[in-house]
Image 1 (cartoon, rainbow over the protein chains, first blue to last red):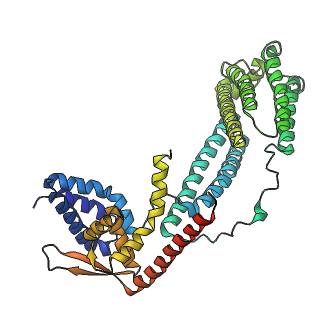
Image 2 (cartoon, rainbow over the protein chains, first blue to last red):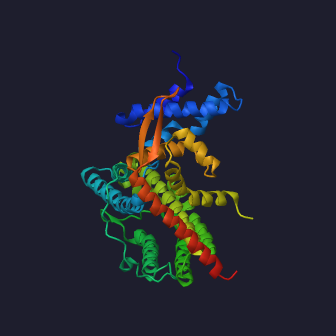
Length: 313
Length: 113
């Protein structure tokens, strides 16, 4: 007995149908397919073409099987999606950073290799983020398939955020951003005068940069404060602000990364003072710092664009 | 001009529930899958085979249809028939469909154009 296309179609469909009902569904589906083929041959279509047409009309066997089982053709459906997203954002935004900081901190204290510790922290945070996302999604996908009710409390109006909707940029956010920028600006001269190692004053950044790139970076940071104020007055991200922000981000990230990677940012005397920096550690620190700067820049530009788009609606 | 794709999805939404009603009405006279498909199509309820066949089984699981194998003809076929429970539910569904039609008519007549 030769295997027909219909046999293969039935086998493919029944593979994922519960065993208890398999035989009955097979008999019925086989008869239905034969009826459909007969219907077409009666109209003058030859049997081979008719069979192909009928099976094409019935479509992907996996999809047909899912309809017989009344199973969802989605990983996480609307019943669970919001709960899944909320939990995922909560966990991924906190757990990886916490674990990464912990691992990096421990590494830094037990080994003489701060650059490696930063790397270990970042790679741990990344692994934890991937693992968290995977397991949360897996649990919700299983819930979706076994149809467990979630029994979450119903949404109430009391959960509405306090902030008025006509202002996306809060005073707290603006103040925090400005404080951060001011501290960064202050850190540049501070490291020049106040870094004391073994009784010697030893700037971390190359003093030669004060007559070249450091004033540029300072100017960009000061312009950043202006941008924060303009953004607060506008109340939200607008496209011109996004443009200015992107220009400022690049004006900081490009020189900073270039100086880091070409080894011109850090004071050579400072590097010489530490064995692990001299023995290649400075390259790791530079590379990791450059990657972090690039990632933060990309994130900041995307974040501002997303918020501007949302505000424009 | 209405976008064809949008029109298609709305028509699909509108038609979705009527397949169940039409099947329960049609199966007051017992019939097998393919013949029911043809009958529904002839009466203006076009339905895909891969939707109807699983639907019949689901309605049977819900006790709204009963089934019986007919082995007298050249090919054994499973005949479905609307059960007593199916008939009761069908009446509720038909009442509701009529209520929708009445409400819609009232709304159309009451609303200024």
